[in-house]
Length: 394
Image (cartoon, rainbow, N blue to C red; front, side, top):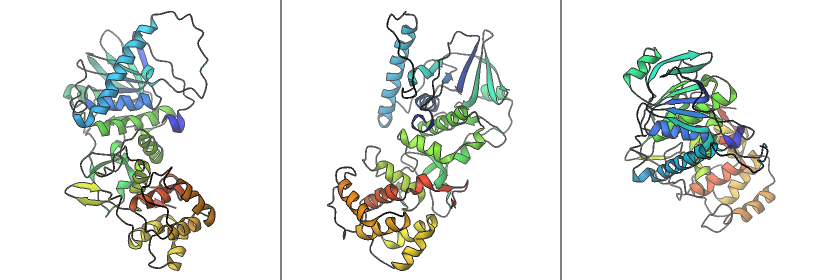
């Protein structure tokens, strides 16, 4: 959440030899989800300790080809971490620059792993948690993430009926998809923020140990509560979604729009709003970015988001969704000057938006082009909130 609200964080790493280690987030586990969760916490600017029951990490999925990029990040973090620890023992003769609000938090210094550690007990400590470990040491954290299904570990919590999160399958008969904080690659499945949160258990998250995507979502959610010193039940959906999008986690698992796509962010945001709905085929989700947009598919969703859209569509019945009509729509609903909008779009069409088509006011827009324009000029994802069921709040 560095871009959004951690720009002014300045966190000092906790020394691992202290009797009581204090951290923002404590993660229990040694598989994929524990690592991706911890990585997200540190990248977002909060301190994290991952406590494993074995050594080293058992990162089966991260080592697969489809997760090779994530694994490279892991290796890079480990190498930098070793170098950082060695550097702690050296006396620097150089004058250190004072930290400023503009300086980025070094995520490597916030990320630490303690391996092969016996957990004696895990207990509430104020609004946070304390894990008592061997040799009279303990770790205190504001938020606890359990990414392990070890029976002994769960029994140490002394919480009955604790179950890991369940996923939902994307469908448009309900609006829950708008509350997604993680899509599961290659499937129809997504995780709602409100299925991650545990009723009556604040600042505690329990996730599947092998899901990289869910681990990342849990890391962002834990960091939000830790930074704001609040309860997980008070998590802000849009802030967490935006943070995860910043770090390239697909919230809707489109099979045909990769994170390397220049329009990926706009497509994700419009996909979450449901203004353009995906095609569900062969148990996968397809956005069909090059397909032309029809008046019928966008009319009601845009009306749901904007009162003024009702008037515009009443005055423009069954018109083609070409560039000119779309400019008229966003200018009317968003209170923008038509000519200025046309001029700006023409400048950005190929250079900024990387569209392969030519700027043509009579051109019927593709779903890709329409998504970028609506996201840019109306910002439905950023400016319109939804409730816990995904219903639009206007």
